[in-house]
Image (cartoon, rainbow, N blue to C red):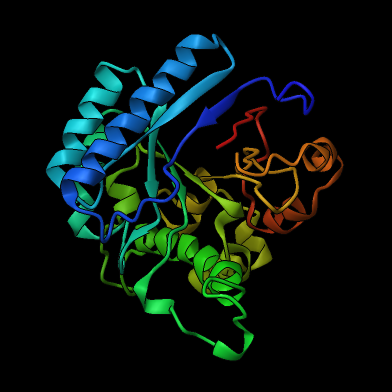
Length: 269
């Protein structure tokens, strides 16, 4: 961290865990163990770390208990969730109780893409290994975008369906890897609102564009000029971190949609 000029890192997530197939008790146990360990790191290195507490989703009651413990006892900075659990995405009604509570607490929610059963075995001629390149290079980043869509979708024109992002407007979402496939799909999501004269205006409150602009996006594997710098702890790329400040590729694309500039926040997971 010191060599890379990182003042503060925020810990999050569990590697090697599959919440879709692991026994519930094991999922709950590992989430609690991870959260308590992260809190100890924060205490042992004052000012250098924060922690996003892992929730044992898709288990709702257990996740509600962990939210209470994480915020009231551990004093976590926010929570960590995967973009999907199996083929169920964050904006679905199945998770509404959890996000109701996070909304009540005005919580920060950091996300990272996960595998989905829907997308294994695609384009087999290009997959030299079970998880590459289609799964990790295309499907898993796109799972982030699917999660975003599940939150901002507000029904067909004229139906006035309230989106999950609107219902949980006090939740601050951070999306990994610059939103996955969002830059390429934003025009499909928004339709006419991508016209230059529309983008130049302040978006209607609770519209899809409004939520896309209020969300935050980290820069992992994408370059700088976004919101939050993320790096996977298993491969700390000191040289890469040191040169990110000179790169603005992602920002140039996101500027088209008026997404907010960085505000000096640095984190790592």
